[in-house]
Length: 553
Image 1 (cartoon, rainbow, N blue to C red):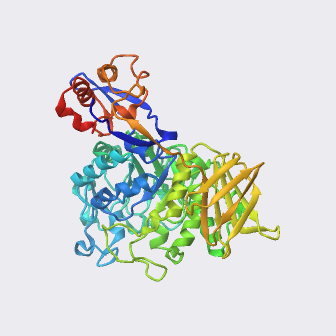
Image 2 (spheres, helix red, strand yellow):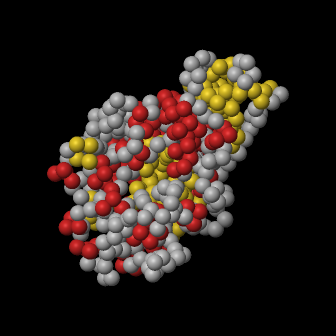
Image 3 (cartoon, rainbow, N blue to C red):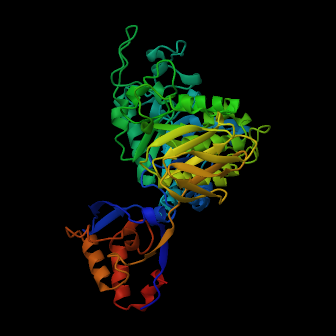
């Protein structure tokens, strides 16, 4: 028999779960599986469990060209900037700020896929198809509350929808008024008539088009500014609507709304429909970082009332407070301290990719829309935290400030434990720190993924050294394990028994799903699906057809 190609998968994640089977137009069953690439890179199977890279203002082609790096860096998903048609401001300029503006991305003119800043529909599809090969999910930033501020630029298809596509002119003057907040013009942008069934169907159609093109989830911009089904009448205005119940039924895996905490946020009610943003946590975290502290007593408490942290998306910074605020004054090392907190925490973490070439004295860096952001998203400390998160899914979180050499609790030293699997230790001081602390991690020898330093846990105590101004990620990362391609029954051989099992599975025979022991090995052609194409290749190979050995060499 010819040499069999071996793929490498992280041991703890080597078994791929069979999720569903559907009958194609030819009558053959196609088994939808997690991509083999997800196993190779140790990514989580669900967006909620993993880390999100916000590839802010990257083009579709730029994302596509960096997917291998993104997967190696441990991100389960990538969030794009808005992908729909937008106003061409500044003569179509492509600077983030200047001749061209990033915020035109948030000014829709029509709900079709593709725009001059990010790329075409075909480029979006190609990006999504490539992401599937790595097990990476794509989240689209969906701007469905409003259109551009220039009414004349909005498509007639929106304006002339039956029942009106836009809300009447209303300025937001009272931020405590749900009526004004949900029906008024946010920053002068024309508000969509979201109570109108025609508008709802238009948006639903767009979201379904995104899913059909390869999207796996959505982030809803300005979600707080869209009414809920039970919003109470106010000042004689009955403005409740069914928008969310309609548009969320779009077939995607993961959806979250931008609910900035404050007046009229109703965040707990939005959280009943989808995940929500943890803006208060981010604000508190940045305050701590600016003060040079990470007090566990503060970080353990801040959240949103009646919302579980697992239902939230958290960040050190977002594109809004980077561009419109002053978070660019926080240096990259400090961002990494913050990322260690959110990345190892309970909520779904989002890493904002700053502009390439940016710094605390140069907010816009190289000032271009389209290219990759700066290198901090794949810094070893960030990557190690991502890997740690992926390897400790479902484990409880415990944050504790550690004691300095004099036995005094130091708010600059923070340990975050995940069950008994390991810990992330942040040393914000300017001296190396010798750890000698109580720890829930199982007894044993551990290696810091960042520095390679050795740590020991014995009798409930962890010892080792964290370098000054550094993050240590202490756990035993699963070693890669070879997968024999074609060995679907996992017996160490590739032969007719495997071909027979795969043929029956892809033909829809009941009872054969559980007989496939290694679905990763069944995706012969590596396209992220298991179907008749794989069965045919394996059947011919095991029957001795020479021209089919290319799939196994």
